[in-house]
Image (cartoon, rainbow, N blue to C red; front, side, top):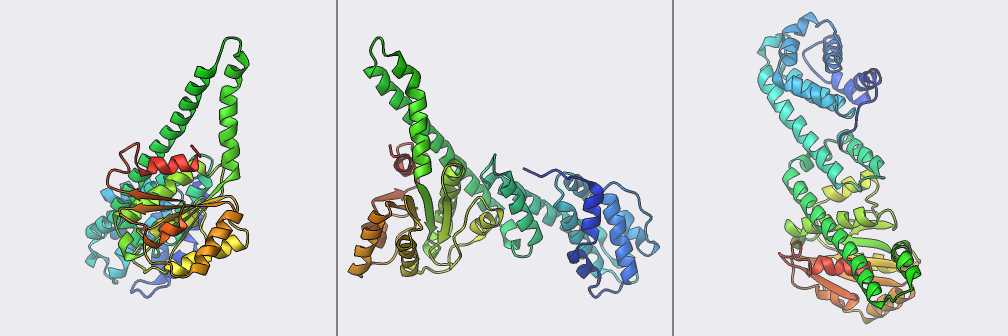
Length: 393
């Protein structure tokens, strides 16, 4: 979901005069400042389909840049998103001109342009994946926010573009789970309808007329009553497929329930604040955070218990995504956990992605779901059970 540009004039002015571009222009370089600025203006003007005279000091270089196949691709990309022009100019400028001296012909423009386009196209691919991971229709602002966060902090998220294959796997998992979720909701309605039909007798037209409204009303009421709070384990055991399954599950549930519930996410060990996937910045933190940072098992559970004590998790489905770790040796903690989950009407569900046991989380959980290799394909598998639990089937 690429955002359309609004006006070239505004974007051109904002792009060239941004603080980031000014800092780049004053960086040490053999070329005089005015030459670099004029060159930037020339490239920016051409990027927005405007004509501008070539600075004579770099005219051959500019002609080679603008005449390259990569530049044509960049121009096409700049028309699709107003977030890309500044990044395109910065990438090209930083690739071509640092290697230039007062003799521009010494710069290998062709190689620099190929390198630049490879980086830019990788970012564009990541932007498309981010759009796929977003909550979707009704939350388009979160896509815009996520794209802005990503493009304005490209150094921070540089490693993310190297993991596009992993991100696309998360998209596949999310879509598979989302499809299963929709299927379970449909089955629920059909099963309820079949039961109603069997009970129906002649003259009960009102039951037939009001059945659909009643079913949808019950679902809507339930959706508003209970919220979802997910906690992701980031220990070494979650690296790879377990991490991708967890993020796919989080985003699938977010897409389905965000309109009717408060959906929040945090991590066992990062110390990050509670994230809302509907926030573009929070979603970027969610998908970029990596497993392997170590696990503070007790700290995470204490944090959750404290939220219950403060009444911040009332009527909540608490989903712990972990391969299981630690043993709870404190009977006082277990007693308090049971007391406050009951007081706050919290249901604790542990989902174990790619594992075989929830270990210490078992005694705190009402339900333990083991996600094996067939969990995403088998409609009677663990994800189906999780959906049933959340829908109170």
